[in-house]
Amino acid sequence: MSGFSSQVPLWLQSRPQITYDQMNEESASMPREHQQKVIREMFGIDMEDRIEETEELISHKLERLEEEIELIEHKEAYETALFVMCEYVQSYKFNLAFLRADNFNERSAAKRICAYWDRRVQLFGADKAFKPRISTLDFMEEDLDALMLGGGRFIGVDAGGRGILFNCRKYHDMRLSRVDSMARLYWFILHQAVFESEHSESVQKKGFIQLAVDGRSSGAELPTLATFQRMKILISQFYYDAEYAFPVRFIALHNFVNRWFKMESEHALSFWGRSLRVRLRFYDSTQQESNLHALADCGIGRSMVPTELGGMLAFNYDEWLKNQVFSDMMEGSPPDKNAP
Image 1 (cartoon, rainbow, N blue to C red):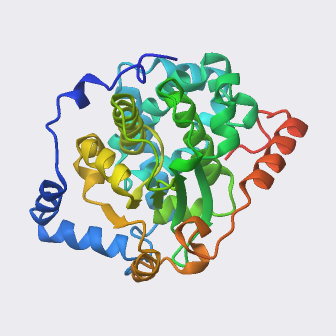
Image 2 (image 1 turned 180 degrees about the horizontal axis):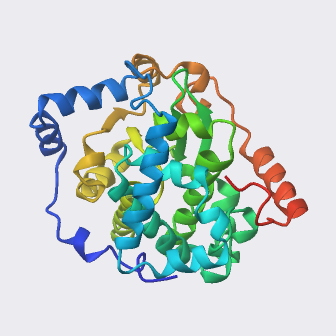
Image 3 (image 1 turned 120 degrees about the vertical axis):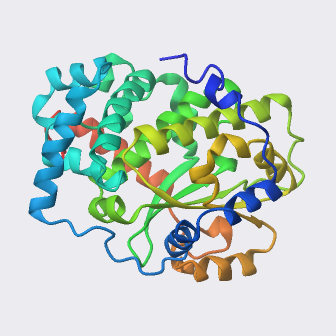
């Protein structure tokens, strides 16, 4: 399970350092059509279904997806999953989620499915990877702090049906040795949202928004080399999983920063990759009222903004986690109970 997170991947290490000014220039240099698409999605404008999902289209794309997977040479984890739980791996709902994540590009979706199983084995181990659900029972002892603190939370959908992921650094296990724990937490939360929640179809079609805040006081400790390294690894994992492995589309990444978080964030900008970097927005975390207005302009009303950002949503993570653990223990995470 180690390897990916023990260091920043080599192909990400070679990327040149990016500043905020360069990031803005990068966004401005995009083709006009792409700029307008990003703006419409970030502001929740014209959020009707991007693709008309007819039965004929889905059936054709599922057939093409199977053909594209066959063409991939190295897919050992996928083949193991297919052997262990063939019905699930070939199910309509599971594969449709991947097609939606890649705008029905079957070749990209095939690569994403194989990468999904590779990463799942990497994070959870072969003994826990090959089953439909990711549950609280799959976490290791070293993950308990990350799970109990809840640095990543799926808090529902906005009025347009876009999923909202809340990321608060105050609730992170900040140890460099626990980066994998945070990755497992994100996979657990996103898996619930994409495959098991009442909003599954909506978030697959509309995508996700992330609201990220440091949450600590401005007098929090000065960033160290270990802090910067942790940020690089965490973001590189997030970028890799969002772009290549998990069936998810992030359409907006709103970051509310204090002076230290801003310093760390700029140091790690290159690790986001251009496709996500153009969707990053940064705000002064001390200006809550103006930030709330900015979020409202993006279609995110106060009722769906956590209280940590000055909004009205008081998400009881402890109660949610307690109910989740109880449910997982009662079900014993059966392989067919909540399969897509």
